[in-house]
Image (cartoon, rainbow, N blue to C red):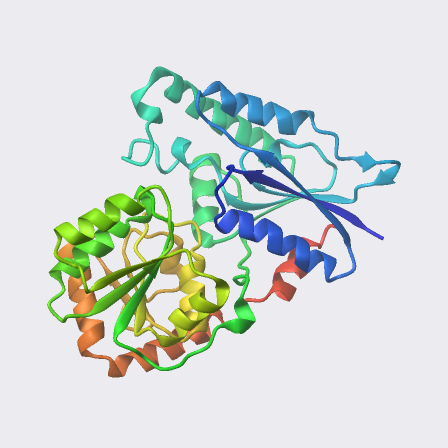
Length: 346
């Protein structure tokens, strides 16, 4: 029986898309009769030398065999897990250390403001180029991640889309009177932009916001300051069934992060046959959201985004057609397709 080790990177006490992918990938591989285990190492980047320590921890790891049993493949997912050495190393890249790449020089990274940050950003790029070139195959979770890898490291890769964890559960119960926003509450997810857009919306549309995070109190205060009490509901973290029900009953989904890697929310919305409102700098989301066809794409500006909210709310007849078009785009994204390609070197 073939043995596979999935290499994951865990920011302690945080569970996002990368952690869900690692967990679900393990379950899917086991369903194919493979013996699977996961190695998750905690990740820190402050102080900066923790970046080097994390890289060296993976580099020093021996995943060739365990108790005399050969490990046939390792699947690496996120920086710095792909530093590990193995003759059959396959990378399925969620993202690199973004602060050293596309976020460098933006408000979402401080590496350009400090000498140690500038030093370690160059170090990260060197480590990545060296480590990724030893892989038998490099896949990414989206075209956006592949484009970054080519731009910054001159490494070719193949986008390999995968479905969300609850793929078979999403449904459509019609088009209600509220928009749904699903996100972690952190700056790069730009929930504040959604709130500001709601304040510019004149249609009276409501918005239900699902998720939690460090910015939750700050965002609640902003909503009150903008006079959105009664129009915006913070639902916090919800269970799976509640999330499915919210997708099923909403009019559409508003999702406007900065340069997202892939964006499960988009796929979940389309599987629920709901249109998505996003922005033209939202990254991987734009591989699926087409303006006027599967949703609306606006400038990352509250007034422009608010106008899209009003257009969707006042033209609700279009919701069904856009939702159906979105569903057609994502309905064939499956684990079988992903695993066939991922396991080709096994």
